[in-house]
Length: 143
Image (cartoon, rainbow, N blue to C red):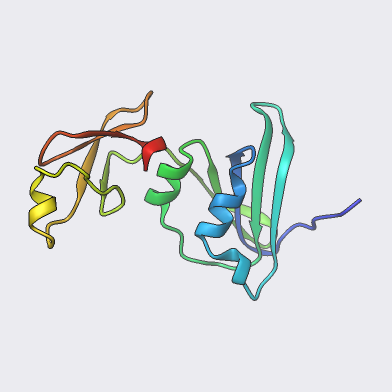
């Protein structure tokens, strides 16, 4: 049995949808980290049955908007002196910029390359976003 010790100072990303932790791990570039990192997959969860957890023994910058888009149900715990100093519950962001790219050929973003791709959340249950320029709808699963 492998023991994952408590971390003294760093970040714990918890309540990741089971099997999805590797995507977040790779997105954060943790496979190249020179500090201690643990990816725990399929851990028991009283809420969801199974979950993934990422423990990072370091303080790194996190794009909470992108993480919320990837998995809106996860929690980011900031750890200091082996205790949770701050707990951030994520959700789908209301607005995303230059994360989703509009593929509508008639959209102004297809012609004007320097215009930012801006989308607003229109349905949080279906995770749907709408382009502010052409009203094209995308779901997060398509991104």
